[in-house]
Image: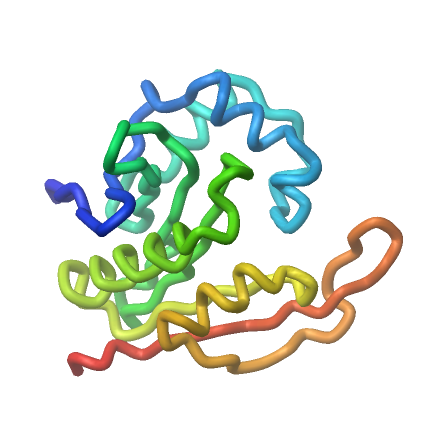
Length: 177
């Protein structure tokens, strides 16, 4: 399927290609502060491994979008709708703001809004869900601002810096159904 550019107020989303596997992108994935709540933090990333990842999620069951600033086109993060279950019509949603100077500026909230609309309107999914480490308050707020509701907690699920944290699960059902 041809995937349109998703246009927001501060940002736009477009599907990533291998050409987007830049040094900046790789540096986010290897930065312990930026990737602290990502399972990908356990791997060392390179341009080639990043290109391979983009290839692996370029299909009709995964949509990996780059988050780009409208005013200058700078790639500052990613949002993914993926692991689509076509039978039950649900998918996971996850995101990363890789450029720290854009944390706390509503970018994640806007990216979730755009990706959720794409999933519900274009893909006609019934439900989206995502999880987060309990200390990740920024992600929690971004989900809540988009109408996602807490659906559950997996206690002591993730080990981070010697401490176990809960996995908080959020979900949203397509309001258009």
